[in-house]
Image (cartoon, rainbow, N blue to C red; front, top):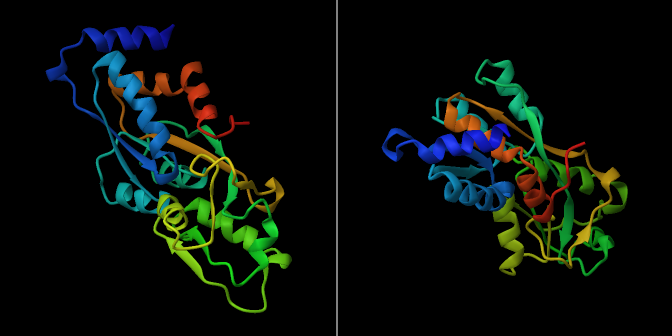
Amino acid sequence: MRCTALLLLLAVSPLWAREPIRVAVAANFKQTLQQISTQFEAQTGQQVTLSSASTGVLYSQIVHGAPFDLFFAADRETPEKLAALGSTVSDTFCYARGVLVLAGGDGALEQLANPQRSLAIANPVTAPYGKAAMQVLARREFQPGNARKLVRGNNIVQAYQFWYSGAVDLALVPRALAPDTATPVPRDWYQPLEQHAVVLTHNSTVDAYLDWIRSDTVRSLITEAGYEPCP
C-alpha cells in the first residue's frame, strides 16, 4: 500500500521539480537494475541514472564524494563499511544472492584443473565475484603444476566479455550473466554472495524507488534474472 501511494505521489508531481535518482550499482547487477528502473520510470515519470563499476571502485568513488543516492553492492561488507564511516542514512539490506557458475566448461568443473585452459575472473581486490572465484581456485584439486593463463577483468562484466569474445576458454561469473549451459559451482566452494544495498541520501523520490525495489514484483524480476532470494 505504501509503495502504491508513493508511486501515485510521484506520478502527479511536476517533472521539473524532480532531480534524477542517482544509483551506483555493482557491474553484475546493472542489467537487472536497468530493467527494474525502466519499469519504475514508466510508472512514475521519475528518471533514474545508473553508474556501474566494480563494488570496490564504487566504494572509493562514494568515499571521495561522488553524488549518489543509493548504492547496490555485490557484497555485504562494503555497504557496512560505508555505514561505519557515517556515509549512509539507512541500514544495509539484502536485495539478492548471487550464484557462481563456470562458463565454457562443457559441464565439467574439472577443467579448472587443466592449466591449458585459460580462465577469466573479475579482479578479486575490487570485485566480490572475483574474490569468490579465487576461493574456488584455492581448492587443492584446482592447483595445477603449471601456471595457467588467468585473465582478470576490471569487473565481472568485463571478465564475462573476455569469455564471450573467445579471448579465454573459461570464466567464473554470475549465473545472471552466463548462458543456461554454464555449470553451477558448489555453494560450499565459496563464501555466500549476499548482495546488499544502502541509502546514501534521503528524499521522497528515493523512498518511492526503494519501496519499488522491495516490492513483490521486483523480487520476482530479480529471481527471474538468475539470482536467489535473500535468506
